[in-house]
Length: 291
Ligand SMILES: [Zn+2]
Image (cartoon, rainbow, N blue to C red; front, side, top):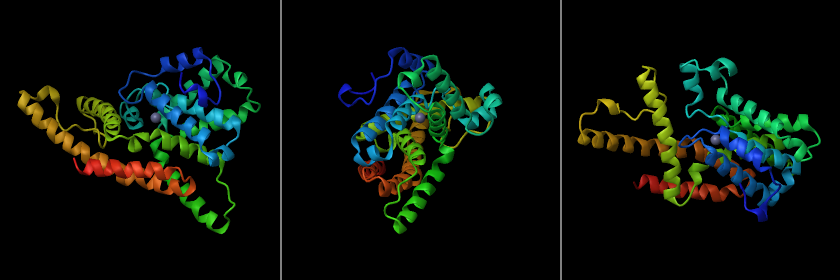
């Protein structure tokens, strides 16, 4: 089961969960375990954080967990850019923007319908619930990362004039799901952070290898820097891996410092619990820099 029974908001039928699990591929990072982790985080936050309990209705909370569980359904282990490069079937069907997120939305909605989940949860306004579900999954696309930060900045600015101002729940739900989705940056202890990071890089390098094999431009951060089939000795491999590891550490520092941290720094001004996440990010950064 996805969450400890003592903190359960609602229960989901096991056949529905099994169906979702079957639709996740056995990727190193974008797998069922990642979806469960994201859903568990969202669930823990909305269940335990007083200010979140007052922000979302019970129905919205339920839809947030469903979106978290479904947000990477069918993920092929390669990104949107790659779908475009190889003109994949998914690219042809869903277009250039948010290709994989639109695919996950489609699979997610079909799965909800197959198991009558909205009826099971007694959701009254199904149209609103589905629109909320769509929005949240769509906004897990990293393309929206900067706009999440801008929305937080705008809210902080406006609430200086009006301290009673409440953040738009739909926007905030998208921001929280995104925060849970990039959770590897605040995972502690450090070896847990490293295991998530390594799983992610394993998937990235597999895509980079695919791009190299097809003579396509290799996406940023996905080039291991060598072609394993062209190395002649164990020593050569060891040397190439060492160079790759060094570059990987620097790109992790860059991701945490330039991408994740600015988002969580803004988030903590709207949601005080994020201060804990910022502290964990600081510790990971210090450990990374000490490597
Ligand atoms: Zn994800």
